[in-house]
Image 1 (tube, rainbow, N blue to C red):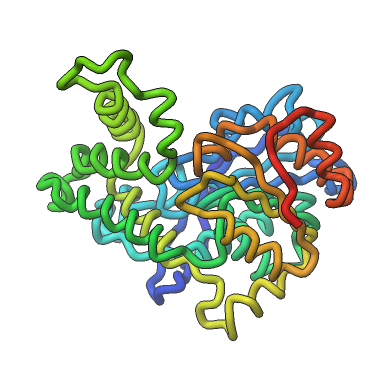
Image 2: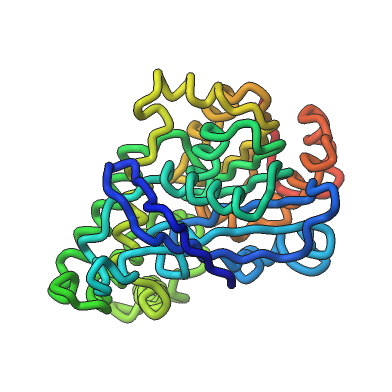
Length: 356
C-alpha cells in the first residue's frame, strides 16, 4: 500500500477543511508507454484499496484484470480506516476526531481520486469501475471530469441514494449510537454497536432466498440456537474485528448524502454530463439498489448500455457473481455491441439477461 499527503488544505463540500489529507492507495502492474492501460477501481463501503484481496474473481494474475496487462489503481475512500484520512486520523492537536470527524460526501471522495490521478500523471483512465458506494463515487467523478474517463462500469449503484437505503443506514447508526462506548474520546468505541449494525446491514445485502438456502436449520425441532442467529452474530463479529465504528458512521452518511443533482440543475442534467461509454449492471434480486435505479442511470447517460445479472444473493451479488460480471466486462472492453450480449451470455451458459 502507498500513501501520500496533500500539501494544501482539502476543502470539503460541507465547507470544512482537512489539513494534510492522506490518500492511501494500492497500485498493481505498470503504466505502459502510451499510458492507455489504466483500470481505476472505487471500492464499496467496508472494503479497502487492496482490490485483488476482495474482488479476486476479476482482479489478479490470470484474471480478467491481470496486473501484467494493466495498471490498476484503487484508492481507500476518504473517511475509511484503511489508509486514507478518517475519524481515527490525528486532528489539529494530534488527537483523532472520532465522532467529530466532518461530514464527507461521494463528491469529496471523487475529488480525492482525481487528486491522486493528477499526482500520478495520468491523463486518461481507460476503465473506471465502481459498485455500490464505489459506483456512487465513480458516477460523481465521471460528472466532475468527463474528459478523463474513456469507459465506466457502474454496478448495483444509483444517482441518488434512496429513502429506503437511508433508512437502513440510519437504523445501523442508531445501533452504533446506542453503544455507550461510542464517542467520549474512546478510540475503539462502538464495537458492540457495529456488530448490531452489520447484522442489520446483512438483511439489506442478501435475500429471503439466500437465507432460506444457507441458514435454515435441518429438521423442525429446534426452539433456539438457530443457524440464522449464529450467522448474524458471525457477520457482525467479523466486521467488528477489522473495521471502525466511526468510519462506518462516516461512510454511511456519505452514502446517504449521495445525490448527483445537488447544486446542479437536476439529476438528469448531471448524468447527461457523462461522456464516457458506460455499462450499467443491475442485480435482479437486489433490494438495496433495485434494478430500476440502474435502468435510470443507463437511460440518462448518453452512451450507456444496461445488463442484468441473476443471483440469489441480492446486493452482495456483485462480489459473488464474478463469472457473470466477467463475461459482460470482457465484451464491453472489446467493444462488443449490446445487442450481441444475449448471444455471449447464452454461449457462456451464464445466468443473466440483457434488458434493453
